[in-house]
Length: 229
Image (tube, rainbow, N blue to C red; front, side):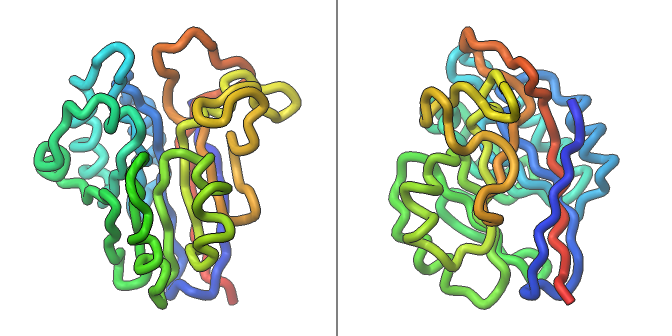
């Protein structure tokens, strides 16, 4: 596992921020991920879904993971497809860990950044209100394939979208992934920045599927939002 660093410059923030981004834990051991997150010293943590594993019906590590995230920095959590298909964690259990749950909702961070979370397989009309804000906006949307379908042209005022789900394309050849849930063979959005607007993390672990990760290290993202002069 490694730290992968990205920087996004904008005139819409009052100062520089550092965020840690994690996705797709799938109820696996999380100690290394939290160690790297602590090294980043983030202003806040974004957990972009899939902390449980719907295939194996595992969730015993999920809440303790969130609790330990909160001890490092304020933490924002949005649902992934595994939480929707395997709804074993209640909203109260999640918020009792101390995280801010973003379930088709948003929150103002430090009076400067609007952070929203889109829940998979649900309505998106609320995004029109979300993007109608003066602050810099970050949307946590677990599935990167939503970008082309629902966000790229339809909601152009959302400044930055952060996703996971693709697991880096599982097997990477010449910096291209071979397969992703929701995108199929030779997926378009698997890792890094697209259009300087969509940021996709390869995630922390695999699900229980048969396709291994090859040339595709797990990662914690260090995202710097830099105030543009």
